[in-house]
Length: 300
Image 1: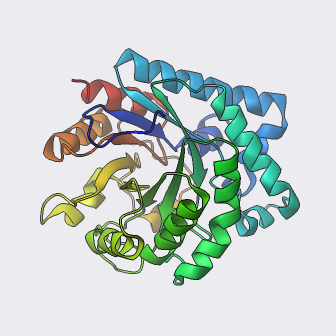
Image 2: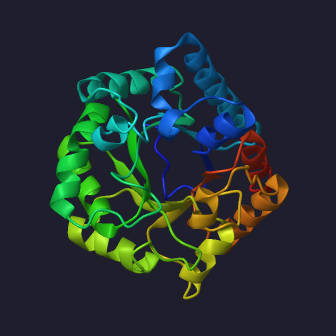
């Protein structure tokens, strides 16, 4: 199973910035920011396939492993309902997304079923562990039964929602990674410090998650969370290109893609400072230029 191993020093690349690249750079219509409907057209599937192949090529060029995420961040009941996608079709589209990604399975490629928060990733997450477990269980079960090697929950805004996801993944028998989202002060939207959010999630689930990450934040935003040193069990960072806050990004009409070379060097420096980091990548505002820069700057 090609799941990133925290005992191995190998770098793994992840890219969750596909949606902003499609919308702003490719003029692709993604209602509600949902990418999973792309699977229903030949053109959409080819675009996804090209992204996967390009990401794999970058990883192999620099000796890195590659995490291939399914385009299912929005493929849960409440999020799909917002774009009028029938709830009864979610099992099919989630399973289809895993099967499509599995076409690229290899020893250096991890096939990850992507899960998103129930609500807005920039707002406070769910406050009830049981409600989160119940809400996410069906999508998680589908991913597990479809053969995904890993479940990665991105842009999670509360430790309670993280706990529910971890418990549901344990019941389904699929390894899980949780990626929290932090504000410019390094805390979750509800003000909880990142370190505390991870510690609470681990305590409540007996350390059942494979590891934790942060995504949808600039490297400068995570710095306050690391003021007291490395955070145990934090092994990945999938960064935004922009230094802007989430509120500023929500109101932006143009894409801020930052400086790909600078972002690559910032993440490479973070990995040198925190050798336990195994996964690096790009989130909002990034494209394959950023991923190549990250891989190049972090190469052995």
